[in-house]
Length: 264
Length: 278
Image (cartoon, rainbow over all chains, first blue to last red; front, side, top):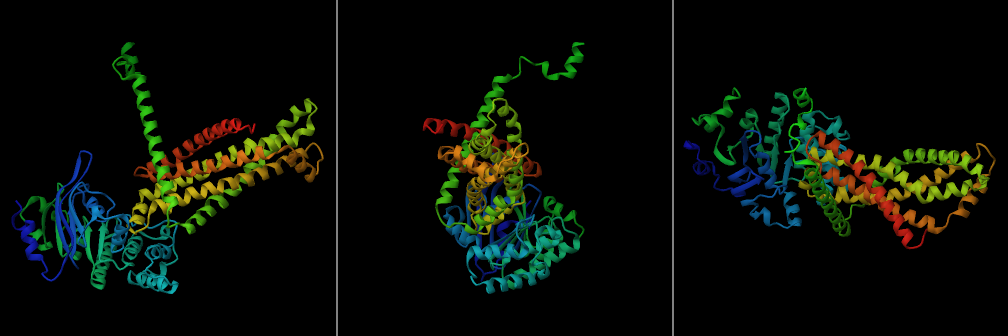
């Protein structure tokens, strides 16, 4: 059933011996009442690695990354980020850790009442890493240039297209130079061309800043372009994992179902 | 005929087997007390976050501008009309008793003591309460509150505390300005059928008003502001997902805040009576 894609085996083949695990998830469980979303999820992510998590809608992918960043509390198991157990972190330490993690929301979640510039400055002001106005201005402009939207610096979020909002969301996530970025369906709702641009942008960010990523997606094109490793989540567990090509060759019907939907 | 009735009124069929009004009442009471408990916890969290640094002064100032300055035109127009109408409608009655000269005093005391604060608080409950409820509801639905938390900002402090502080400070100010405008409206109405100078009119008003009229009204206006901010924030912050949830948050913010204004007013009257202000 799990054939060559059994988690442990693939871990061995994919492991970069010289890189450290920055996210370690062991037997993670999370329920909402009687709805058991994560039943026994295990995952280890190394520095500089891009992992795409595939799964049906409502299977708990977004819950997983919200647990990682401490937006949701998990019921049982262990979730360590940078070697620290998330559930045991006091709030100031959790905030400090969050500064090292970028989060790109599905809806982009840009602050409606602020301009693009203010959206990007907001996180910088909060963490106080760049105090002088010139430094903040320079960093905002540099980040917007990286996502190709310097001309939108004074626009309000409502004036932006879906693709632009995603780019700004990504810019806001990378402006603090995080070590990990969590993407919640970054290409959902975009046309194929814009989705491809966003995927390349994500790759670019990974290379430029050596960022590790967890990408929640249904978009197989995005998965093929961005993933070092894919994890298929079914019934709250990491059902299978491997490279794109390995999973594509899998005989498992549950895994194949993801590849049949897209003609790749 | 009976069958037809059952089709039209299907609920009448099982009248005896249904839980009945006692169960419905019991459920409603339970929901009410649960909600009251949640609001109390929310208020408790407000005081906890309010008392300890860091303080969001910039956001408090921005919200004070949004809540105070932007509500001024509506409050001003409404207050002016209230002053005008009360005076015009009171005049015939006072004329009947030959007490027309008391018009400025009567209107002044009514506006400062009761009508001004309550009507302006209700207007603010409508405008500010719904706006806060809808804004926070929308922020919740579009994950902006989560984004703030992930970005290392305490969203409760940044969004909720700043808004409640602003409403608590701005609504008394709006009430004072509204009362003044209402008195100008009254002055205008007095001059419709008579000729009274502005100085004489206000002299008459201030002769009738004492600190025991003004202070309780001023103090209760802080509570009005606090209640409007608290309910707007609570409803918006706990908004259910979806656009329907945002609409519900805005709507229930107005309803609950308005009812609270009346309850606070009632309590204020009892307390002022107890301390001998009336």
